[in-house]
Image 1: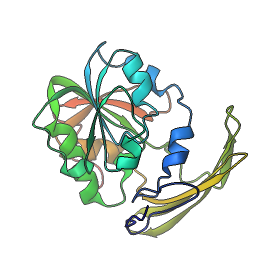
Image 2: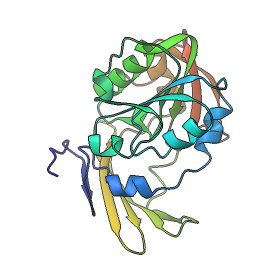
Image 3: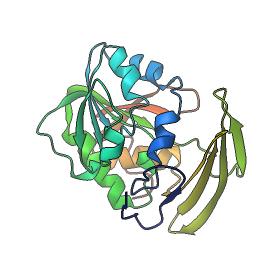
Length: 238
């Protein structure tokens, strides 16, 4: 399948590659970690949940199994074809307008670190547009030293190796990040653009969108629960 890659994004390896460099076969293989437990511990049981950027359903499936009514959104039909048990919608996140509101909106996979600030603003507007009164938005952030500890690698208990090969500045506070996933029978790479955000910059971006941090859900502050309302001020990068 031929796709038009976004500038600065690239992926290699067997199977379809999405416009942002994600390999569908790779994402279908990646095991779920503790993320569904983090989500389940932060929101009401059985909540209506809008998952933005669901990929091949790595988190979707365990959330459905936990009783959440999930609407899963992705721009790649190849990804959505792997999703089971959830309502699926094919759309770019920034353009999504379902005319509905959800108890929980989830923007995981570090998407809030989009290199283009206008794209990030579009993502956050979509979150707010679909948020029910009294609901919350769950974000997954990069670790605060994630771009500094490179190269590094992690051997997953499932038997594959994840290597963060490089994070090279390309201007305007954005890095080009290259990752490699090595399985016994296949290797995939992904290159993408990412904007490191300090805690203050992240909270400032949320405030600009009309959101505020309710609480950080993990000790490393990579998972965040946000709600509608004024933030801590206008600090941070715009």
